[in-house]
Each structure stands twice: as structure tokens, then as C-alpha cells.
Length: 428
Image 1 (cartoon, rainbow, N blue to C red):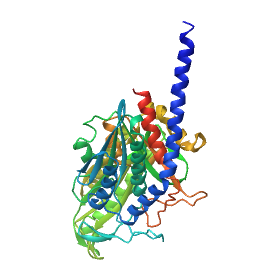
Image 2 (image 1 turned 135 degrees about the vertical axis):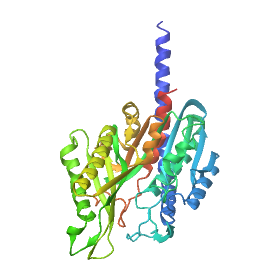
Image 3 (image 1 turned 180 degrees about the vertical axis):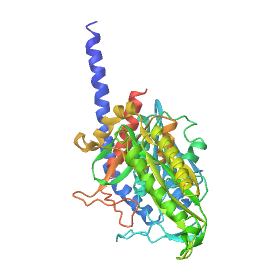
């Protein structure tokens, strides 16, 4: 028995030493590839494309992945890409996801690689900009693919690289985004054991990673309320039923759902009206008006309760005023939920990528992500990588002034690579 103890100790030392060597190699390779990652990001930033229209972006990504010898499939969910890297060691199937679409926003930041692209959006020519950082997500995942391909013989299991179109939502009534990818079987063949995603955050300083276990980002529902009254001359409102005044009551009432009905100690709720359509002339009370907005919740039971309260409130307020109200609610995304056991398991991977002091536990966000649909099919972990220059200022996503410091995108590359090796080590 005594003879086995030194051998066992030597084996443990060998395993630990090998893990350390892999970690050092990832760090070296991620640092070396950073200039290319920045170059890719800036090219994509200068050439943005809207959801379900990312044809050139798809070709650009696919060309790189094919050059690495990966099995590449294009045209997934219309303009998405899926690539497989089969490692040299047995292990699980790990999926890594980046979204690739831009937004109909005109860039205001003066950069050498500023976007001046115009494109068609539902029949209107609009400016296009990567105003949410999807360009950085693409570049970090392209970099991850190159690093892992160069270490293929040591990679445990299979890595599935998912470049997803239309995260911001497909145009009009088209299908798209993560729901369509899932529908087309992206989480199968081979079946994914766990999926991971990154989002750049302009509120988090470069070099840092922010995460949260459990509910992380909100579900996103879109609603439209149509109020049908009775038209009249603006000078004689008593002869009609004013749908504009009734709509104002409903809108105000919706805020009492947030402030008086929702248990905000459990999770936050947001109801925002962002669009109002009604009337054609100042002195005519219209027959019908409609208004639309978004609902954000971080708990599925609260989500359903809010839906029912909104429908009941609109109907009763309208009825009390002699009108009729119809409420239509469409679910756009689910709650982005980080599987707690997976978060605990992979937290050391993030700490090795950024340094323990730079990995911060954050709070939930009322922003939404269709990454949530992947999490319905496998354990999932979605986290933020810092994009704010040191000392700030922060900029808002989805605005013309959105700005990302891309000088430390290697943090995201290291995080993804560490996850692949560490998850494979645990799940062999």
C-alpha cells in the first residue's frame, strides 16, 4: 500500500501540472490573438447588418471557421452559423454562443471604423449600427475558435460554436433568432450538455467579468391595447366616448400594477408604454386608438400574474367609461436563467480568465436576451464582460453614442476557452 501512495501523489501532481500548463497556454494564445480579435471586431462594426439580413457577416465568420478546419454549417435560422470542433480527448458537448445582428440606429461616435451603412427595414431606409456590442461577441468567439482549434488534441469532447442572427428580433412577422435556431435543432446533433454566452457591458470596466446565479435578465413581452369608443366633435365630448382619455386612465392604472400589486421584494417588474396611435385632427375625438409597450419580469409566476392584471384592468376601465378594450400580449423572450450548479462549477474558470478580484457578482437586469431559449434545452450560463474604458464614462446600449473599449477582449476569449477545458474536466 505504501508503494501506491507516491505513485498516486505523482499522478495528482501530473494532473495539476497539466491543468496549469493548459491555463498558461490559453493565456499566451489569447494575448497573441488579441490584435486579430480587435481587427475582426472593427471590420464587423464598420459593416453592420440587421437581423435576418446578416449575409456578409455570415460569410465573413464562416470563412474564418473553415480556415481552422472546423465543420461549418451556414444558413442556420436563415443567416446563422454553427461550427463543430471535435477535440482529441473524450468529453461533453459544450456550446458557445455569440449574436451577430446590428440595430437601426445612426452612429454618432466619431471613430475611424464608424458605421455609415444604410439598409432597408420594413420598407424604409435606415442607418445601421452595432449599438449593443454584438460585433465584440462575434470577434471574441472567432478568437476562441482559433485558440481552441490550435489546441485541438487536448480539447475534451466537442465544442459547438453558435453564431446567432436576429437576437434583437427579426423584422416584421418573420421567424428568427434563438427560437428559430432551437426549432431547427441547434441544441441537438450532437446534443448539447451545457451552453455558455457572453455579453459586452458598457457599464462594466474593461478587464472585469460580471455574473449572477439564477434569474439574470428579464423576460420581454410586447403588448398592444386597442380601445374602441365613439367618435365625436372635440367641442362636444359628451356626445362621444373618448378612447384617448380612457387610454390615459389605463396607462396610469398599469403603473399601479407595478407599485401596488407586484411583490417587488421577490423580483422587479417594469411596464413601459412606448408607442401611442390615435386621432388625425386636433378637434376630432377618434373612435379607436391603440398603444403598445413592453413588460419586463424576472419571475415566471409574476409574469403571468401581470398579464392577467393588465387584461382585466384595461377591460374594466374601458367598460366603466362605456368603451371596449382588447389586450394582445406577445412573449418575445423568456427569463435568462443561469443554472446555479453550473455557475458554481464554472466560476473558477472566469476567475482564472480575469483574476479573482475582477470577477464580480452582479444584480439582475430588466434587459432581455433571447439566449434564454437555449437555456430551456440545456444548463446555461450567461455573463457580462466589461467594455467601459478604465475610469469611464459608461455609455448606454442601443443609443447613437454607444462606445466599447475593445482593448481587453482577450478576457472573453480566455473565459470561453477556460470553460471548455474546465467543464470537460469535470464532466468526463
